[in-house]
Amino acid sequence: MRRGRLVDMATELAAARAIVHQAIHALDRGDPQAPHLCAMAKPFATDTGYSVTDRALPLPGGYGCLSAYGIEKIVRDLRVHQILEGTNEIMRVIVARGLTEVCG
Picture 1 (cartoon, rainbow, N blue to C red):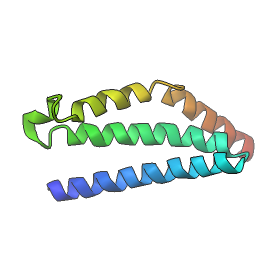
Picture 2 (cartoon, helix red, strand yellow; picture 1 turned 45 degrees about the vertical axis):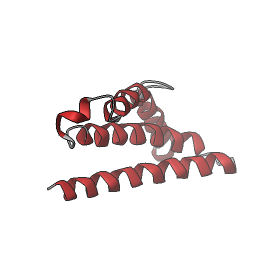
Picture 3 (tube, rainbow, N blue to C red; picture 1 turned 90 degrees about the vertical axis):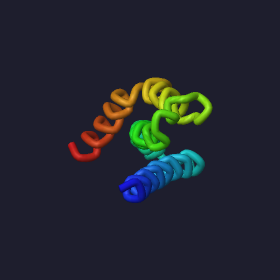
Picture 4 (tube, rainbow, N blue to C red; picture 1 turned 180 degrees about the horizontal axis):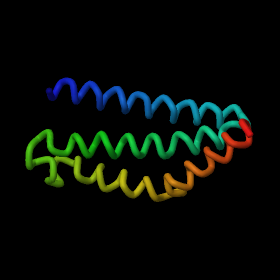
């Protein structure tokens, strides 16, 4: 069971990294889609990171909540990043606006 959970968590993190890298490369190239990609990458990466670390917290048993292990700090930090630099809900509004302009 733990191996399958770890595989899923690693896969989700790889997907989050990939969309962040795509957004970074778009910014570097001056791609006009860069803001749209960044608005997709931010909520996806922070939500994924929070979900993965929240599931990792109980893996070492009760020790996961201890500051010595560091997992609890990552969970707190990711929760803050879901809010900072524009909440994830606002990022979704930006993406939706861009999609309706393209499709609409």
